[in-house]
Image (cartoon, rainbow, N blue to C red):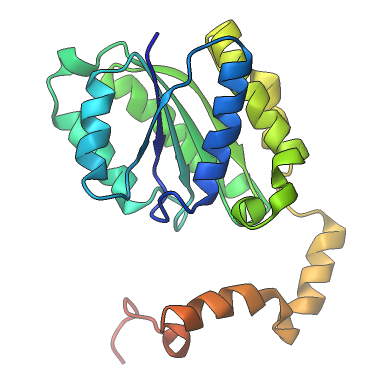
Length: 224
């Protein structure tokens, strides 16, 4: 069986999605399957390359971060392109998804997971499952992330794909286990939020990209 892993992160090869893909590949290979093809959709003609690779593949795993409670633009462009293809070119292909977010709670990924399952059905694709996890921002930054509980769970997802033909539901439940902040953490957030400590990392990114001075902009607010 030909397998394809698609990286839908706008960060390309230097992304948390790429880290997840690496763990999935390790699981797939450890189960005795051939190493799958990887396409980074943010690189050069990545979307066109992804569509061509999709046509030539039996099984696809699409990995991407949650962007504003939905999918990145390049992923939306890719799925829109699939909808324009001859249905005979894509019907009955097998597809699974991985959606990860920087925020720890997985509650916010639930609507998108439901959409992906429904979209797959409308396109005639066989849905293998959607893995969801939070707290993904350290994946690419922490050298020890490859030895974490989360990395091992993603390896298990890869193995179950080869051995069972689906994403193991129990493993998916473990990945999505931290659904929302508990009362203790909610209280801690309320205490720390006014200090600005929770925004330090994001402020660094805003300054890096020249957007810090516009962080309170409301471009879609009614004119006053």
